[in-house]
Length: 225
Image (cartoon, rainbow, N blue to C red; front, side, top):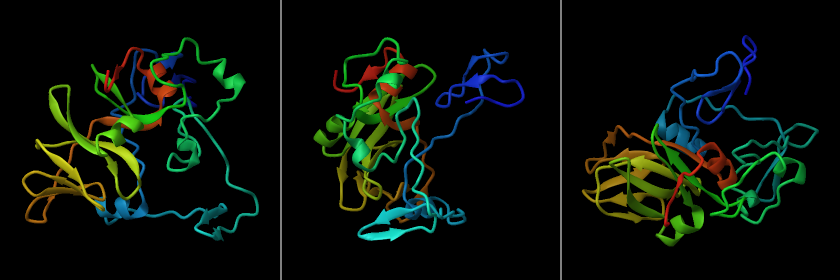
């Protein structure tokens, strides 16, 4: 991304200046961009404003939207274009040759188009392949940078997410994640045994393809290896 004032190019994931007069500086703190449904967004903050696009889209067998042209299809170096809850989750999807030629040296520990969850701090970055998250029951406890982290597939959006928790065991329910102490994660919100919301902290995270995360964080940790 480029800012109009200084013409500096910025890394859209980490917020670091990569080329131009602002190199050495960071725009931050960069917030998490979580994949979520409208229901999740409203559960997290009831005052959230919902904008409904007029672009054509399909829900079930119905065609919705009033625009005469089809929806724009985009992409990024994180490989997150076109909605990661759809068929673009396919790890065997093919990348255009012209784009692949710009990648430089790749990390071949995972297939280029593998889908997963990447989390990071200032000192550590780790990638969780979706197939390994699912193999662990779609919810499990891990340790990251000295903290306990919940790695799970959000039932509402069917996308992976990470949340710092004070727990030792976890079970995935139909619509919620169940932690010990009768604590739950429902629609992305941490709820205690009394039904009260708890303040939830999350590591920096991104639902992404392997090539994008590995190029952004060279030599990153790979869960399961």
